[in-house]
Amino acid sequence: MKLVDGGKYTLNEIEASLLDNHKYPAHQVERIMPVLEEVDRLRAEKNAIILAHYYQEPPIQLIADVRGDSLKLAYAAREIKDKRLVLSSTVLFMAEMVKLLSEDKKVIIPALDAGCSIAEGINGATVKRIRENFPESAIVSYINVYADTKAEVDSVCTSANAQEIIKNIKGNPVILLPDYFFAKNIFYELTKNKNNDRTYLAYKGVDNGNIILEDVLNNRATSLSGKGINLPSLPKGTCIVHEQFTPEEIAYFRRSQKIDVVMAHPEVNPEVARVSDFIGGTEAMIRYAKTNPSKKYLVISECDLTAPLKEACPETEFNTPCTFCPYMKRNTLESFLRSIKEEVFEVNIDKKIAGKARMSLERMFELSGK
Image (cartoon, rainbow, N blue to C red; front, side, top):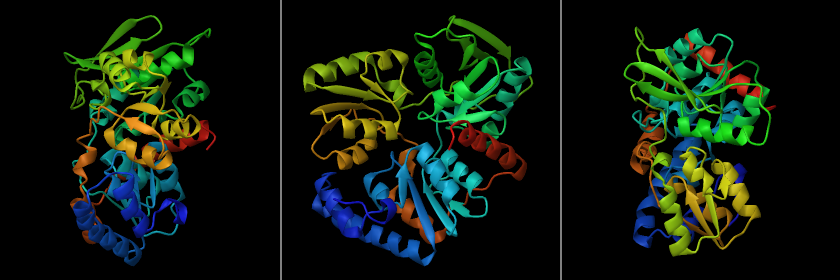
């Protein structure tokens, strides 16, 4: 099967892919295709572009003009020039990011409650309090945060460029937030076998009204008072999908399925990362699988990541514990169609917050040379 039109499949190719690659039953495909045909018609009529994350269900991924991880979608948003409407079939922080980089476009998302446990584990007020205590620091946020948090950090990063951003940014200590596991894994890879003259702090979360940071090289915690500020809605900013996986689960799959390669996302527990063969974000996993055609992979990530993996490497077997992200799955095929038909739900960001948040995204592009 061949990609056409800059990454978009034809409707005939989508139907074949659903049947052949994704093993949808024929009666289900018969119900799906008229929906996708209507989406395709409305896209042309409204001069719209569709963006979809890899964790969306396969029909949504396949009909999208651009699909990818956070970084790829950020680049795509920045390059959008001639479209009036952008349908972001993602979670809310990603749709916000599209709006930040395409402020003159109307940006819509199928479900406004498509949140993120990482994003809800931090907020701008908490970052401000951290900066008050570490005024010389470089505060880097994982891109999986809302605009109010992006507005208070020096730069954002993704799983693909986190090490590069941290190496290039000025300031000490370097504070990476909010995903504690992600920060531990990134700092481990960045500092192993090297002499380090900087301090690396990972945001651990909120405990009894206090903000907890951990010096990951010295295994020492720092507690900051959260008194007088609105603390995050969740006490920690870890991924509710990736935090579930265990080393015992990997050992079971290696033994029972005779797995050749274990690929894990850097949001997993460091104990899981240490027993995996490859650590990387979604785009990195796809590139790795293309260049390492092992017979059996175990994919330690969201279940629907196997969709682009199967398309990229149809002869390779991909196994997964198949854990779904409940936030991503709030975008259904029905709400997806309604979104482009009725142009709902529109994403808007306070102008003052948007201006500051945009700077942290542009800083990421600058530090990564993109």
